[in-house]
Length: 93
Image (cartoon, rainbow, N blue to C red; front, side, top):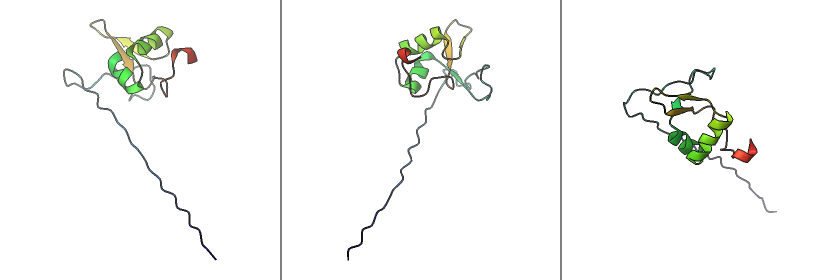
């Protein structure tokens, strides 16, 4: 009589990003998010986190698909929590 054994292994992968500001001050928080912990970043940083092109971030802004704010210098800052999950593309919105 032969005995068969079955084993399972669970692997967890944790990923995080470090967001730095040029002045070293903490990033601004998104006023539109109710959680109070959503930070605003540059479109380039948002694109890196969402793993999409910067152009896609600007398309999402044009469509109103993400929270954004215009900074004092006229540049855009994007809410990280409002980024679509899984980096959906424009034709999927």
